[in-house]
Amino acid sequence: MPPRLRSALSAVLIALSCLIVPFGALAAWAAYGLVDTGRYVTTMAPLAGDPDVREAVADTVGEGILRAVDQHLDVRLAGGSVRPFVLDAVRSFTQTEAFRLAWDTGNRVTHDAVLRALRDEQDEPAGQPVTVDLASLTAPVKLRLTHDHVPLATRIPVEHTPVAVLPAGELAAFRKGFHVLEVAGFWLPVAAVAFATTGIALAVHRRRAVTATALGIALGGALLALALAIGRTLTLADLPADVPHPAAGAVYDALTATLRWAAWLLLGLGLTAAATTWLTRRVRPSRRRPPANPAAPTESTRTRARI
Image: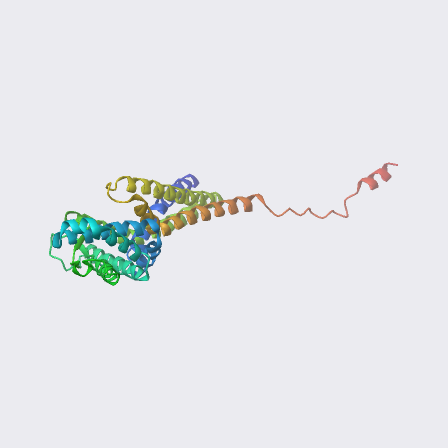
């Protein structure tokens, strides 16, 4: 193969590899990091101690309990004397170990329901949204209110209230996207490695090819980190006004922590590999001088011969 053709083909393969790197990391994170229920629950568990998340959960659960009370009891009592006790009890409950267990259970149930729906294994009839039940949070709050002798606490209804986590109209699109991610999460990283290896093998100047590949990987990691930062801003901006942004930001940061770590790892490894290649090119072992020929006349010998 002519050298020019080899160089051109090598450059194309290396460029494709570097372009695939951030997308491959994103697809692998979605296909393997978010799909595992145990890993997801472990990732979300520290949020049970986040003040913004606790406050958001307390407001949501408290308002839900008050709405249920308003439907079954006297509205004036619910809105007046009972409301402060309910909200204080819910906030106090979010600081207990029982809340952490309920938080982990809720996340596990939600993740299982979404995963079954995306894999087309849900038990709900076709055309129905994917829902989870909030009774696991309402029941412990009622128990705590009853223990504190709050008026009417024993009459608070603990109803199985389904909350939609995936709308029925968008379920088909989410399912198709999930199947694409499962395939891309495996093949994109494989393709990136194959293109980079082949491009370096075809290169006329392999040291330069290695440096270019390393810099491209570093650039891909930097672009991935930038995309995550921009995605956080856009995600929070698109949320409804009644959704607390600090809590949503904490959830986004927890979910993307592994991906951010991967982005900085790609950046660091790429820059390190490029710097190492450049240094090994500059630092060369000093060439040894050839030994002097004893048969050759020296300057002093030639001087004495002229004298």
